[in-house]
Image 1 (cartoon, rainbow, N blue to C red):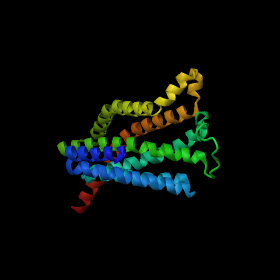
Image 2 (tube, rainbow, N blue to C red):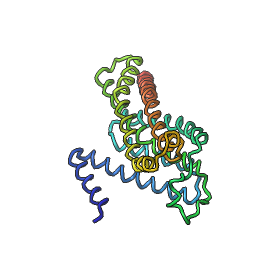
Image 3 (cartoon, rainbow, N blue to C red):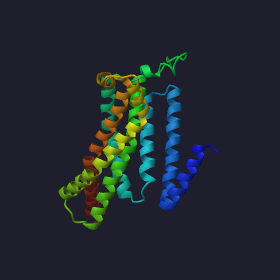
Image 4 (tube, rainbow, N blue to C red):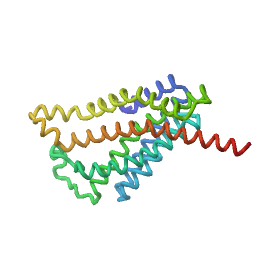
Length: 257
């Protein structure tokens, strides 16, 4: 048994031990997301437009992550709608920033690994870069949307007569509590991923200006900043979506009566 399989079984056992049925469902959603992500890579390899793949696979991953993570429809539907809105906004922003930053493709640090290989694969590296950034932001968006939506659902259940303005304030308050931990999670995740690159920089005595203009480092930094911006946008958008859906439910109730 390989180390990855062993760690996967340990993860499944711990998730089932602590989370029970919900923990098992979360593990299954993780496997499904991995399968769809791999399927997206295969589609891009067969020259399906990367942006189209990013949108379709992104929506699928969001739906799996959100709807398999919670049973309450008011929470999940609100989180899903908010995530789609944020994903749409970020898609245009990511395309503009990637085109402006010009960090697609490989850096000089990859030259040894690519020696003897052709990089003329017939696919736009800009579109691949956009796809990678979009898919890397999905987890942070879904997590923030679920946290805000679940908190607002709790508020509505406890105080059903609360005004819409107070409900939005409650969502913003919940967002303020998760922003700090989310930023730290994204930052240290990025730092751990590029730690070997930092060691490379230190060993070759790169200057600060060289580091800040390094293609690989800037690409990783852009992913973190875009993910954090997605979390910031998710907070008010989720609150507004919850208010909108609450108004629709009230209107339907009045029409029924």
